[in-house]
Length: 252
Length: 368
Image (cartoon, rainbow over all chains, first blue to last red; front, top):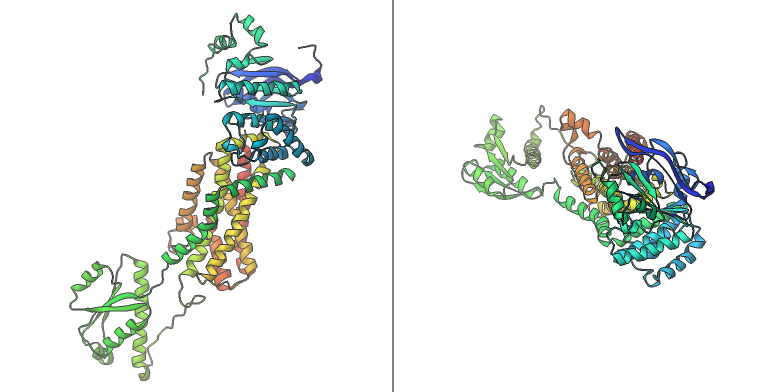
């Protein structure tokens, strides 16, 4: 990790801290994410995952510490950061009453994709997803798994350098989760860094590296294989439970 | 700017695909105006009256005829004794009872102490006072006719004239009120619900992470609803003028300018509400509760502000609809120009500025 070129680093955090009054939600976390990596950001509810993610995506200011995303400082350049990242929330927040292509065009427009490119790229995307028939379907009549695939495609439509996925597979059946992770791999192959939070420990195994947050601190950070060795565990699930047991904070 | 247009188009899709909301938004003003138009009328028409008349002479006959001939009253019958007065009121269809004294004509012409009593149903004070006022003026009129040729030098009879609204049409008072209420309600409710919906569905989060600035998100919510409000304004004005017979004596441009200003205030108020709530249902309730009640009670639409206790009078100053109503009454009915509504324009502008600043500030604050 130390040997990698600095330009290779897409996201970094250095002693990043967020305090709400006397409560320290995120306690001095430091880590780096490299280009094209799938980085799993794990933690129980209330461990501070969401708060950390909000700081990295420019939704909230850090109390102290530094961070960069795509080379921009999170404390001073959040407007530039917003243009270079993609984001998908746990609610697959597309607009239900908009058609598939209208959703794509809306977010492409918001992220400033040149107007000329939107149409050909939309065609290509729909072909890849095998969605051509659904072009004019309202999103609300799509099955959940399809919505989720579409939401992910929309989140990376503008070719962000990094995409943040906040529990993207909640409520989706295992088969759909599998195909979803195939999409994530494809995106990573194209050089899009993936920063993903999840509850499912089997998904953690798919990540290149995983960090586990407990009570606002990063307690473990390594490849899933190394973590299992380190904690002498059979699965990531076991690793997670060994760490989560240390928690003194109540989930909110 | 391009982002902005893309986003406005999205709002247009939302509105146009929600057929029911669309129908309600466009029809509600008309329905409300017509309902209020016929319900809230304080005009008196064909109220039934009864007579207790122990004298039965020329004078009582004359007065009875005069009342019965007018469009305000219609004669229902004679009572046999004063005991029946309460009974006829209880039966409910009588609005006024006229009780004559004995030997009316004689006492009128000679002793000058003729007595007459008007009994009205006080459980509805507004109507009761209107009824007695009309009846009194007709009785005075009769007396004048009767004694007209005698030219009694010391009698002063005031001739009451209602300026700007000579026939005392109720619509002159309630149309401005309903206009204020509808615009406030629809504008504020629409914006607050639409923003609350984005929060509820989680799309707001995605927008906030996107390069769109909060100000852009807010303003692009306002623009489409502004257009709908303008359509509403047009229908309201058309219905008021052509169905309810409301005049526009002053400048139409000035009236439109003031209405647009008021629409802007209402939209800003809606934004402020939506920055405080996260659920569509709550947004709906809050706008209905916070907006309708005070607007109805404190804007002067139903109850005259001058008669309120000081605290309420002071409170009413904070109601944008009150200033709007005062101004459009001046323009529509009195036909006054810009110089006479400067104060109202200033107050509404200040409110707009204050509300929009507050909601943008609050909106940013909530991102923290």
